Length: 324
Image (tube, rainbow, N blue to C red; front, side, top):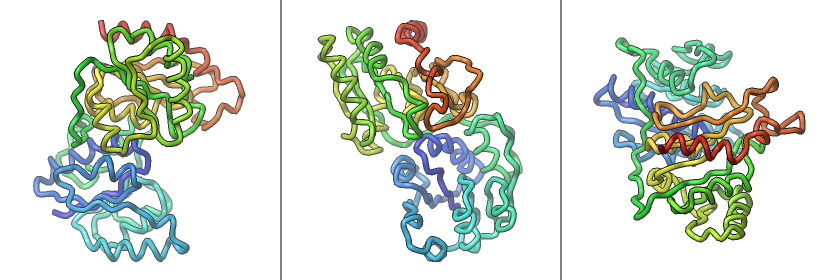
């Protein structure tokens, strides 16, 4: 059975869609997937054993995206089932233009017009559950069991216990706790863990700031990996960590896929929808604010209190509780 899956663009969202993909393999034992998505989502999920084709969607770069979408659909061909985890016009068009009969996407004005199955997803529910319900729209035996996050990239093995630090968050500065506080946390546990500093190409500055603070505190057992890993290497390194401290971000969901004990720092985002899915060894640190969750990229009130009021000591105490 050939199944087309349009993956979410963001790394974390793509990983939160992996339980839905696993449900498809349970429900359709002979399923073979074609994944279409952003570079980061494809790099993370193309290692699935049922994936026979992985295509990076470049249509946004075309001078005429509608024509590029048509050409991509013709190149992909027809499927037995097609699902989009994006709520976007061109994704609905792509499904429709493959001439696949059963096409599923979240309800919107364009999906209702173009596709065969467009369920309305409940709000205030974890995104992994929403994706799972969407994927099982045409299934006969979905009983609300949603499995763990899954990545088919082998975790790296470290010689010593390793603490991963992730100060970045791609969505915007409002989601980011402060480098000096991450450094204070790392220093506190540097006698028990080697330190790995993570970050994407746009987060090298924050990682370097953490490194400077560690140097000033005479901590030497660290490695700064910011901007030095591809997606596969990022996942493998996080998967090998013994402990992970992070903002609400894609790497946070990578850690959940490997069941790495994690303390996640949340500010302006909806923790009930995007926290770690089914990681039993996870703790959320957040402060309830009148203005949260605002879902803004930057603090529009200019005080950033949802993050600024979270102290390094508070996070340290949560870590001690988690690892005790």
